[in-house]
Length: 339
Image 1 (cartoon, rainbow, N blue to C red):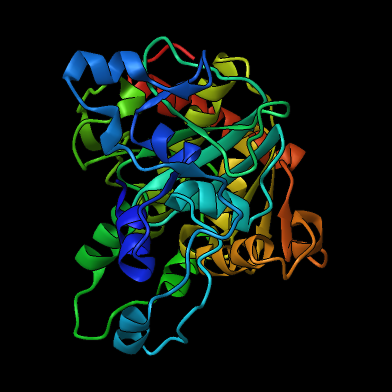
Image 2: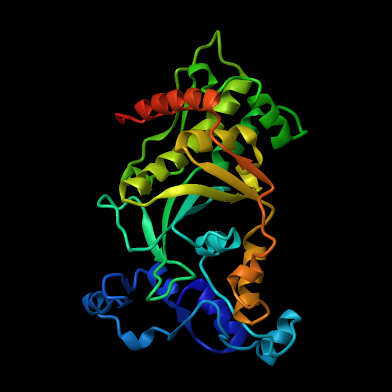
């Protein structure tokens, strides 16, 4: 069982999962559309150990009196939705159809795109899951790429730049970063300081600055270079997805973490060559909408997202986009790739 399945079991006394949960546990046969029995046989796992799979939006049990008293909930409250963190984040952003992608840039950075067929990367640089709105006659799969260091890289820089007891706000750092031009005047940053990276085929190049000039680069250059480096790593992940044949036309993200920074968001949009739509939402709101669909409060997903509109949209700006493309080229050279 996945952690969420265990929590639901403790709430309701009923052990169930979803097809998406089985895919996250690497127990799903994407070709046959069922449990990966060949894998269970290989490892000697009894199929009876797997809980039954329910649809993500459905009545999946009710909160027991014991759990209700422990948590201060109403006994009988239905559990009507479950999903993994990134599929739920995608759902919270209304990312349900091919061509759409959801992104996050918290401690780590993720891009989660939607495909209508099971795809794979021959170098195993991305994961594939069953998405929350998957149906046999209308398949939807989530393709996920992740980098280990995103906001953690920016937090590291903020920490070493703080010389007094008063912490510098991220907003102040973003203003400083915007004072230098795209490309950080030749300063490049690789944000791979949290160990081996799947998108790099499990290589661990570490985190580095390249092109540092003592008579040119200042603190704002460091700040912009780190933001651009993380944005370029995510844009490279979008390129991996496109290599598998997936279309990525628009990316949606919550107005949170690094996506609060215009420098970061415009760098990602320009390097990936896509529009980025920002929304005032989060995973908790998405889970609430999902539970509303599963409990019948909403007729369907369209009604759940009826008034859902972006608060900001970043399109690749032609004059700046060229500067970012040149900087992305230099960044990939520093990584040891031929753009």
